[in-house]
Image 1 (cartoon, one colour):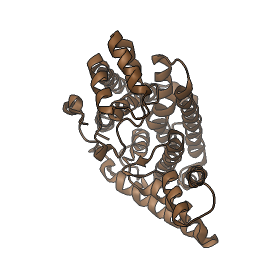
Image 2: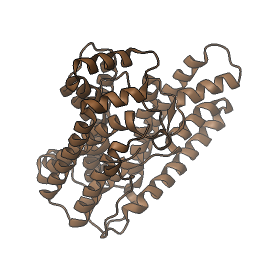
Image 3: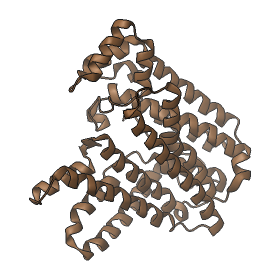
Image 4: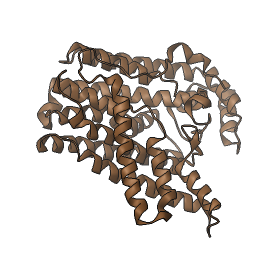
Length: 376
């Protein structure tokens, strides 16, 4: 299944770099990877010394954290920090706090995969599948699938604890760390609330486009862009209600909401039109969910298209290729693409009005487009 309809506006994701920064963002991915690797390998080695039977749990945790990823949340946090700290401030003191966001992300993904019964993530078995395979490989007693689910929940919990531990290693003044913690707590609470709405949507008899967007704001926008920006600014000392209500705080909230929604809407498109070799997941993995794409398709469908959509989605093994054709024929895919374009434009407008140095404004502008039109 190709995503030809959208290929002209879907460049690959690449980090951006501000020309005025001492610690370029282009180097941030490597720095974050190194910080995560050093931390996770040290933590897992210590636990392995407790009992070697923990190896399946620790292997799943290592893979969840170190098995790839775009690392965009530390990047948003970096620019939030850089915009306040200035171009000459060294990034090393805040690097643990930036990298900690990837541990939070790993927690969310592992639990999300259990809830969605996803088989793969980034082209590899999900944590619950890997642990179920370990159960079978060791010829343990009982149900392998239940063992995998239970172990994956613990993998996610471990990543959440690790996130707190790594964040606390940031070398910033206590008030700044406390301010960052407030943003961090809010992103966690909103992500959990959004995840519940996502689960509820799988079981609800009716779901509105407004609720689908609200779910995207809570589950995705807040902890992908909005709160990482505020979190980064707080690490540089811009904390509290005064910052949130000020011109930069308001701009970051508007920008983050627009980018986060665009990110989730792009996910909807990739879920049906993406290339599995690129996304790392099979197409049609989210067919049971009331995504904005499917809600738009139903709203725009003719009677015949509506009947076919119902039949395809009710099938035990849906014909994903045919479903993609019907959804495209309703115009829903193009409308969703237009919605992404509108949100990128709103993000750019928020930046234009913000009190930012030009390198930061340019980097965040490029980042908005890159994550909104990513291929994976």
